[in-house]
Image 1 (cartoon, rainbow, N blue to C red):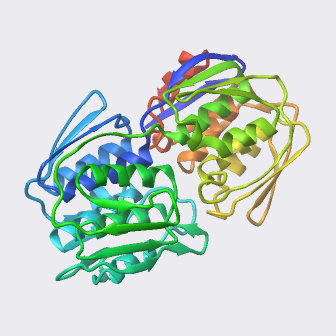
Image 2 (image 1 turned 90 degrees about the horizontal axis):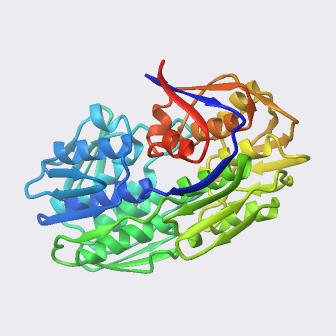
Image 3 (image 1 turned 45 degrees about the vertical axis):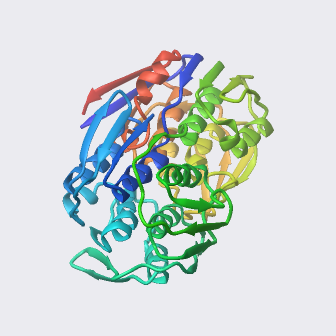
Amino acid sequence: MDKILVHGGPRLSGSVRISGSKNSALPILAATLLTREQCVIHHVPDLSDVHYMLQILTHLGAEVERASGTVTVQAGKITTNAPYDIVRKMRASVCVLGPLLSRAKEATVSLPGGCVIGDRPIDLHLKGFESLGASYRVEAGNVKVFASRLNGAVCNLRGKFGSTVLGTDNVMMAAVLAEGTTVIEGAAAEPEVVDLANFLNAMGAKVEGAGTRRIIVEGVAELHGAEHAVIPDRIEAGTFLVAAAISGDQVTLQRVAPSHLQSVIDALRKAGFLIHTTETSLTLHGNGASKSLELATEPYPGFPTDMQAQMCALFSRTDGISVITENVFPQRFMHVSELKRMGAAIQLEGATAVIQGVERLSGAPVMASDLRASAALVLAGLQADGVTEVNRVYHIDRGYEQIDEKLNALGAQIERVKA
């Protein structure tokens, strides 16, 4: 098992190219199951979660080839059972339910695993499938969905803490081959949902309204193969923006979509950073000192929950008191105890972190608990005295393509070693 050693102190400068979006690539790869014809997907990031998805597709009978960020999938004949041994490693594997149900009218998938950041049930996915006429049962750790036919319907996917992204993806994929028109109310509006909808439309689907809270899907008889380029990963981009804010002089992000990051850009500008944008790039100019801030995570286009931990790392050494309220996953603060091991002064009050900026952090052995927490610990290590030892880095490999190499190219001193 690898661990990452972060040597604090060096300033970052230069440019970095942002990879394709993990949260787009996974459902798009799953959507290739909707057709017997060949699909070609570009800008697929080299991540462990993507590897697991390709394993699932292969197990389900698809022919999969991968070369230099391009994945070719042809699912001529498919099976409908995704086993625990693969599915347990990645929560997003649940997104094969929708395309399997749509194409084969049945699917059996082991209940998903992934990060431990609070309760993330799939009840809204199943509610959406039921509205289309499917039934389901849960037994022996598996969920089986089945239907003799799927019919368009109206369903609402808004949950207690906002709209479900994977649920929206799943129901949208189930609806594309249903008879009639499906209206998804309370849909997630994230750019990754729009990216999936664009791919489905390239396959011959009829999806309108993606990017709003109301998506309309007119069912078609069949879909064909398509070629598609995955959008840039806005969370990777946001993470590198925060890295630049923490210890950067001038850092430019290439191949980004600034409009997808507006809430993060706005927050960093309020914290005192100068950010220049073009259509496909972002440049942050470090100013040596940031301002304290109050933030609250919200569903898109609000401030993303996937950037909350990174902002905790930034505010750990920001003068004054910063406050971050987590409205999406209220239990998502497992990184706080590890940041405190490094000297951060953070108090949790329910779903709110109150952060008193300190003069210095000290490198220490820390444990990554989930994907974004692991990134936050690396960012904290950039500004800490000494060496920060981040363990369980398999978490970070789920969602960041070669983060150590990319940061080193900007001037960081990071080593990946065997634990």
